Length: 258
Image (cartoon, rainbow, N blue to C red):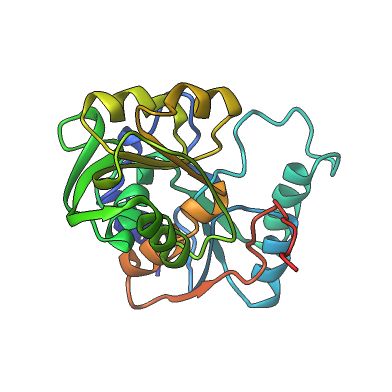
């Protein structure tokens, strides 16, 4: 199948026009006219992921995070990104990334989290245009205690850890979510009446500002977004073989409880 057709299947729900101005979603390496038989799906493009694609006979890597955010001045193996580009070109492997285009799709990154933790009738949190934007907000079918929600998030998101600050309510029902780094939208979640805001990469003072006003819940960035691999697999044509990367893991390590 032509790479162009595979890209069209993703962009049918997450067109590049949805991406943020600062982002670099889309083709990273390769020719849209090339033939693709097998695809490796990943959150991040690392040297280990490119090696895995070579070993598993994939002609395409589809990632959530773009390999290239800033222009490379040299492609001489001086950085991990440059080495990934060199290796991919030499091996004839294309790389495509969706990132904030997929973040802005209602049933994309944040929508998948919402479905996992049981939100109903969720909608866009921060609208960037008609029908798309960042984050989602919705309700649980019934109010639950904060501790029960924390257990649900940890289990259903397969999170090794979560951090939180307590909100002002014993029972919570309206939940706002933004996969990836979304602490900047905490005030929006409060304004829209959320009892809880679930995101990643929160800083100390962001917890401090939220305390007593909303239950701010923070998880590992990779954990909040690695389900994009499943979204890609569901969107891709059945004619191509899709593989979930085994080398794609969070770069953050944590101490194992004794």
